Image (cartoon, rainbow, N blue to C red; front, side, top):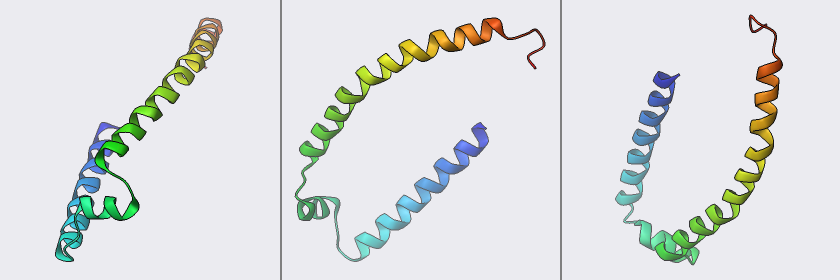
Length: 82
């Protein structure tokens, strides 16, 4: 599993480098693209923080349900695991 994940990460990195080189060839930069979209690095950071602030309470609430359910199912599973 780790090998597949590593291979995916390498492919992602190589694709990112290739796309970045192509965009650089056309004299496009990240700041220009963000500016055309009406975004700044600060606004992107703010959106990321807002996303985490929204997701964290939902994650904790879901975990408060899922973890006890998993524990009960695990404890009631017959020996042998099948």
